[in-house]
Amino acid sequence: MDAGVDPYAVPGRFAVGSRHLTVTVADGGRVLPVELWYPATGPTAAFPLEDFEDGARRTQLAGWIAQAPEACTPRLAHSTRDAPVADGAPFPLLVFSHCTECFRFSLHGVAERLASHGFVVAAPDHVENTRFDATAPLTNAFLSVRAADLSGVIDAMVAPGAPLTIDPNRIAAFGHSFGAVTTARVVERDARVRAGLLIAAPADSPILNGGALAQISRPLSFLLAIEDNSISFLGNEFIRDNFTRTQRPTWLVEVENAGHWTFSDIAGLGGAYLPGCGDGLRDPDGGAFTYLDNAVGRSIAQRTVTAWASFVLRDDAAAGQALSKATPDGLVHVRHRSAP
Image (tube, rainbow, N blue to C red):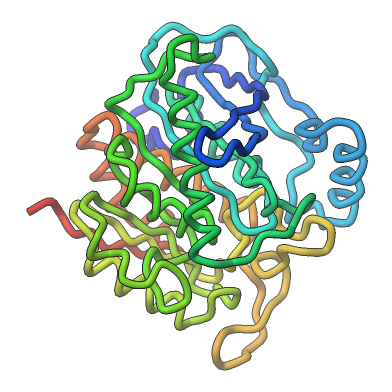
């Protein structure tokens, strides 16, 4: 790689493969659709976003995509379906938890970047809490169900005969919104998970998971959208407070003019998930502004998660240094609390 190029801000050396499977969670018998992204051989292909689904769901998803502004929701995903697995196993594993009423592929761009850098990403649909079947309540009880989903996926990925060879000692979690809170819960309850990265939500607030930080013995880091009017400026203050109280090492990455879905690949999908794309109002003063360009926001998320994963799962000191650098300068602000 050219000198001066930030390795975490660009795809890695691997092609990206993906495949679909189902996992049955032993606790409750929930059957979860799961998407895997992994290091692969051969070229990385592109396919329409709606191809993550089939049948009636594919048709419904295609209709939602058609309603979304093209600047908000990418039309293509970039991975080769069922591609041969690259050499290098056992691989580190990250499990991803999506936002409430979202999808396992809501951050497929982040998953693709991670796979290109040699990580495996496993992302379940939290059944009863996707756009297709939005029946579950936003409660602490269902938060525990979602955390059990992630642990069940980890069980499947490290079991004999698993679809890929995973290093059971190198597992982490990340999530967006309700998925961020889910990440905190699984870091608390599943000792196999080294650390968590929370996007656009606190781990611990009076609304969800109150008092949890005192029970979490492993580090959490945070990616915060400064103009997040979905959780409000109070939600962002809870994130900042969580950062000061979580285990170290920890990072807080704040992004100017980013909204709740700026970092995702589904902003504006079906006319929903719009805070974070196009024009908006600042919270709490109500001033009009334009959200950060979504391609820039997604690239910041891809770099942030990849550098964090490299530090957490590979003990990559250079990744920690890169994560501590505000990139792009002026748009991103970083705070870091180093290990004691």
